[in-house]
Amino acid sequence: MLLAAPAFAKGPTVGITIEGSSLRAPVVMTDPQVLAPFRVWEGPGTSSYDNSESQVSSFIVNWSHGATAEPAHGLPRYKVSFWADEPQEKLVYVVYYEFDPTPKQGYVSVPGEDDAAYLLDAASILRDVEGKWFRS
Image 1 (cartoon, rainbow, N blue to C red):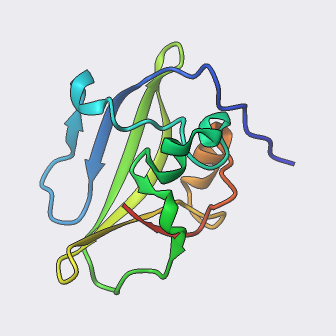
Image 2: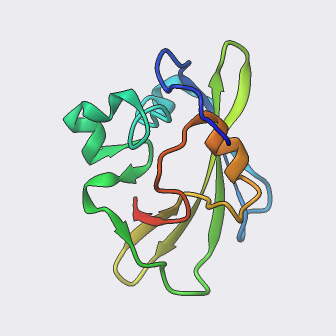
C-alpha cells in the first residue's frame, strides 16, 4: 500500500520547469515572485484544502469546476515539473498542461496510475483526483 506524506509544513515552490511540444529547450522559472502563486501544497489531498481559497484556485488548477472531460486530441502538451525546498531542492510534483485556443482554455492533467509521474506525485500528495483533467 502506498501512503503519501502529510502535506503540511512543506517547503515553498522554488522552481518550475516546462518542457514539451514546440519548445526547443525547457523553460525554467526560479524567481520567487513568479513562483509565489504556484502553491504545490494546496488543493485536494492537503491539509490546506479546508481554506476556501485553496478550494477555488491553487497550484495551477481551478478546483471549483471539478474534473472535466479530456481536451481535444492533438493539442500541444507540456510537462510541468514543480521543485520545492524539502529541505533540499528536489522535484516533488509533475502535471501535464494543454491549451485549447478556440475557447481560450487551459487544462491540467494530474497523472494517473498508468503514468510514470504518478509515483513521484503520490509520494508527495495523494490527492484522490489522479488520472483526471481539470481547468487551469
